[in-house]
Image 1 (cartoon, rainbow, N blue to C red):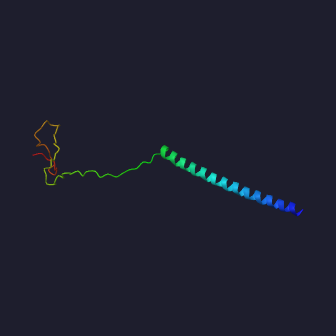
Image 2 (tube, helix red, strand yellow; image 1 turned 135 degrees about the vertical axis):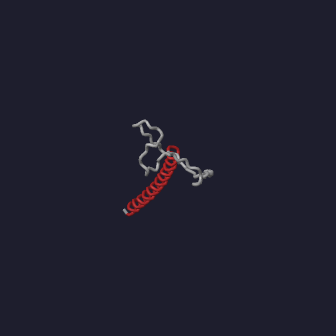
Image 3 (cartoon, rainbow, N blue to C red; image 1 turned 180 degrees about the vertical axis):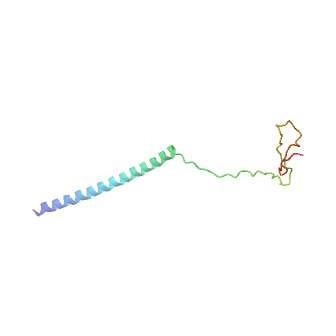
Length: 103
């Protein structure tokens, strides 16, 4: 019976080795598939969502002439007309403190 037990042990060892070899080959194949799927996913993402790159460009500087404060200034002063008595000469303005007095 010892030959039967040794035969069982031999068969069991060979089956274990074969199973480990099959499992190793299976894991390598799965890793290859996962790498291919990741590559295709990156390619698909690149096609469906294009990357937008913005580049800063320098605009030509514009030369703006500034007007000096001593330049001519146009001041418009309001005119007062007394419509009540028909006098259009402007002499009817009574307020001497009025800065807009027409002379």
